[in-house]
Image 1 (cartoon, rainbow, N blue to C red):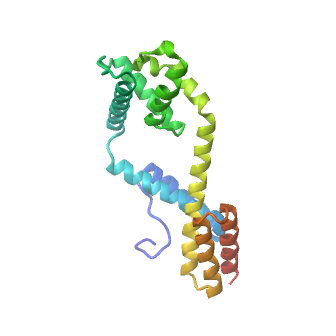
Image 2: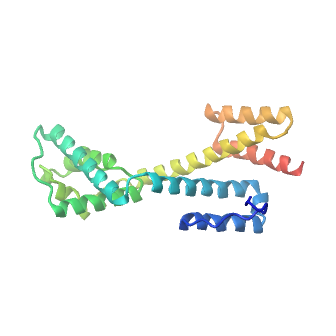
Image 3: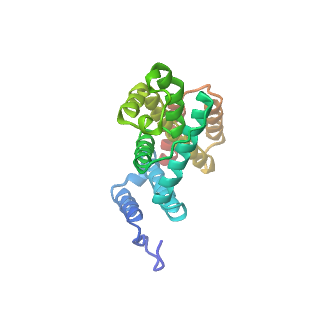
Length: 225
């Protein structure tokens, strides 16, 4: 609420916060805030925006992060090189290779992978199946051919990671909603149902869909009351 007692939200200076402000307004105008199973996702979006703004304010600059990620890639590569060949990688990193590493890191991040994932595959699988690339160098291992081969070979892993992330987000949302229900003035029997549902999910005795059905059912019951 603003200082004058109205429910208007102040207009933020940050563009991402302004976007979220418009989402809050639209949610209220369209009555979405009265639909718990939908509004919780709006709240999750709001939390993501808040986290993004905080991180962009307190974390290192994007340019510096690129440099840090590049150094990490090089360190992992040199370590795996020494482990595999029992030799040190002494070649200097050229400006061209530095740009290639930056691009590989960017592509990996977009697809949900890390340099550790990529370089483990390079040394444990790709070089074993393609000995003509031994001894490897950073330029060849960052080539479009090798990175493209990695993404093709790991498509199922990517899809599985995406599903896991979605399930994790959904589970966190349901747990948050369950805790809100436990703070509501609901019957003790309903509170026990929530508690038992959370315990059963944690112990993997029920699926996420069953927990969702329980939580959404009680949310509707609370709304009617």
